[in-house]
Image (cartoon, rainbow, N blue to C red; front, side):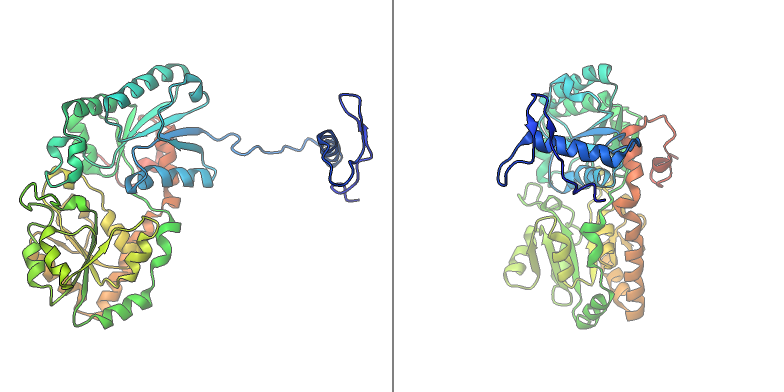
Length: 423
């Protein structure tokens, strides 16, 4: 017998009303409530069937964002989406500072991204008080250097951190946190020296498959190699923070040591810049001697990147603490698309096969990468294989360790990710 569709013959409500099936088009909440209860009892038939509640038994965390841009997505939103989607934890994200203590009941962890103002310091002090009652862990998340003395003058974002009260607030917030989470071993050691805080761990940038996985097409890469043999496409993908866009330091930015060589080789190579571009290259962009692609929405970014036909990426950097602390995101993103590259010989890019100090060495590496078709395709395949080690879905346990285990606990995923070895 079909118990689900068996009719309910009627009964008495708690108000003493006789319940029968309501006429078509009419809604009787008492009838439908009793009918569902009756069917459920018949289905269970005396057996204790446990009906799971969504999220039952999962630990809960809160994320407080500083931004919804690239940093916020890589470090906060995407881990949050994946932890929720794979039923690892229940994580809610917001930007509004909630100062109702009851809001934190049942919460096991609070992660704050790049909080820096005196008002945000007060919020952290509030959290420390509430922590005494509810016992949640507090994590400070940051993926850049935030102390103005080490942010280069060409970086337009420096002005957000150059006031003494900002520096003082950040220093206090970091030391109030139970643990700090950063993107690289160099950044971990930098913050240990700067703040004296020792409870700092590394989770590198991982990307979700849904964003970056499906843009790798070896046949297309090979066709682009053959098509551009006479004038290869050399690409740089990065934001305007790498360039002295306001000419405040006389163009002494991340491209100062390579810019003349780029100008001199603009006919030998097809230089493509996506996102930002050095000011000195703008006249050549106006004459269409180099190509500038405006920055796009982050969810369109891999698709647009993949359509540019870039054969080799380059990643110059100026030597400073800000850049030494960076992640290796440019290797990862290009590698996911199967595009090999050459990278500044600095801490973020120590794993790169081709590294350079000078502009001439950069071009020598470009020519080596492009010299042989078979070797080029092997480099492309290896770049993709390296990127496949960094899918976020495969590293969710690192975020679970960070959120729900204390710094001194055994944390297998974090301890073995290869980034938390302290020499």
